Length: 311
Ligand SMILES: *[C@@H]1O[C@H](CO)[C@@H](O)[C@H](O)[C@H]1NC(C)=O
Ligand SMILES: *[C@@H]1O[C@H](CO)[C@@H](O)[C@H](O)[C@H]1NC(C)=O
Image (cartoon, rainbow, N blue to C red; front, side, top):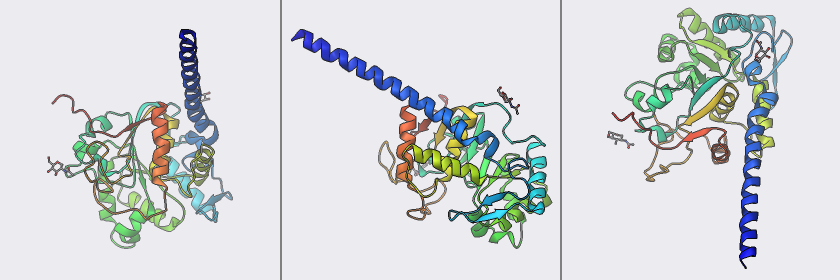
């Protein structure tokens, strides 16, 4: 009897050890392969090196393409010059110690996470989110990279056809961060945004996300079981952070309409309650993936209020 018991304990310990090493190898798999398969450091941003004249840029899910003309190329050159001082890519050849990626979930309301977020070396934000008017305490203000989906230019700034000053003024809060322009689906509006930034001498540094990078990320996560037509900005930025930082912290990533701790109802974003179009992103599937990465120690999801330094 006792021998049996010992044996079953022993095999349980072996199983735990085995599972542990399996998880550890999954961690390495995720980290190493993201860099070797997706090349975020070199490929995430369009540069004059990775998109020479005559190359193609995929503009949408139907794989329509846009050819890099000499005019477009000269814009990439100008952006390289302005945005990363003539280096080949915008991320210096080093990894940061800690990155914070801020999703815009309603879970950040009254979280007091601003200080923790701002303490990261590199802070990534999504879709030009508001940071002032009382949000600072909960979401912070430090921004090193902020994404801009063209729909913002279309919906909020009249496609930048009229007055452009309000748009440029809205960028002030992000200082000289990188402004990551998303998608070539509507390149004209992105180019008008760049013009406005130059004309008003905004310090923000616009760059284009490279659709080739998106595609390699898409294939990478699909190989790990994520089935969805399009990755969310949050997951794309979390992936980029995994390539450029040793420790990745995610805030505001919680796709449900109630708080995980006391179940109080949450708005969709910390600044509004506009609902995403259904079926565009498989948010719970992405969240499930992030939870797995969290439990394997690949990244850290913050789902509670933050300690406020004992003050
Ligand atoms: C970046 O760093 C790696 C390892 O330190 C080195 O092998 C590589 O040549 C460096 N690349 C550039 C562009 O400096
Ligand atoms: C956030 O905190 C403020 C001040 O304590 C309170 O008035 C407000 O109702 C809170 N909001 C939510 C959504 O809990």
